Image (cartoon, rainbow, N blue to C red; front, side, top):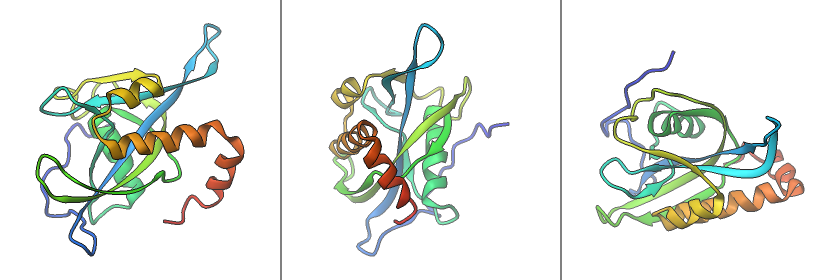
Length: 173
């Protein structure tokens, strides 16, 4: 059973020592199924629309005091995109200024290998989700820091040797 309500409010939000709000996101991905039903090597990335507009991005939101960074990443993917899966080794940390609010944010991004796509999810009525190629996702994504995280993911997935090396150090944040 899935909770169909998103968390709201800022009472539990985390801030770094510079006062930047900490946000966490995921890049949901999967490998396209071939005509034989098996996974191909063709990577697909899930992008979502912003709540109040047509801008496309990856699921992300506030990292709260009562959860780990991985739990926050998983929660945001479920709430905003309606997908569940395996949160993998962190792609990086970016500091950016919000164009909308002019405030400092610290963004942590993770890959999410999608295992399940839900028909109903908390933000279904306010977001669209679309699977596309990595190149298309990079083109439509609104945020530079998210594009950079996607570049890191694509490079990681291209190199099995690099993937193994990073998996060894995945839980060092």
